[in-house]
Image (cartoon, rainbow, N blue to C red; front, top):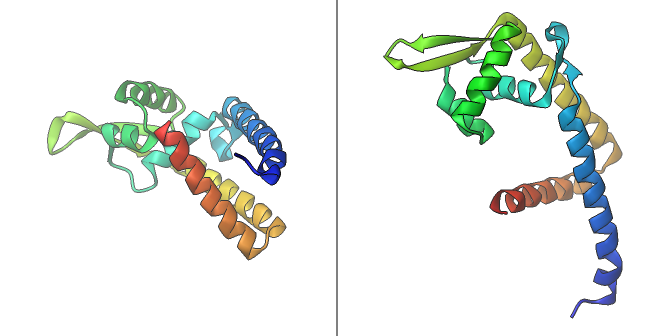
Length: 150
C-alpha cells in the first residue's frame, strides 16, 4: 500500500515527466544552427557527434554509438555529405568497409554543438547546488537505464 506522501507526490512526478517528454519531442523536431553548417536537425548533429573529431570511424561503429541501424546511418550520412559536413572513404585495410570523417565544416558544427552543451550545463549548474547536481545526475542515469530496458 502506498503512503499518503507517495500518493500526493506521484501526480506531480507524472506531470513533470510528461512535460519533459513532450519538450524533448519538440526539441527533436526543431533544427538548430551550428556555426556555418546552418540549421541541423538533432539527428544530424548527433550523428556528427557520434563520428567525433578523430574521424576515420566505421559506419557500423556510428550505428552502434547512436543505437540505430546501419541503414539509418547510411541515410543520415548521405544527408550530411550533401551538406559537405562528412566524407566517406574506403577502409584502406579492407575495401568492403567504409570510414566516415568530419569535414572542416562538420568539425565546426561539432565544436558549436559541444559549446551549446557546455553552456546548457553551466546555466543549469548555476540554478542547482552541488548536492542537487549529484541527485539530478543520478536520476538521469537511472531514467536512461530504465528507458533502455523498456
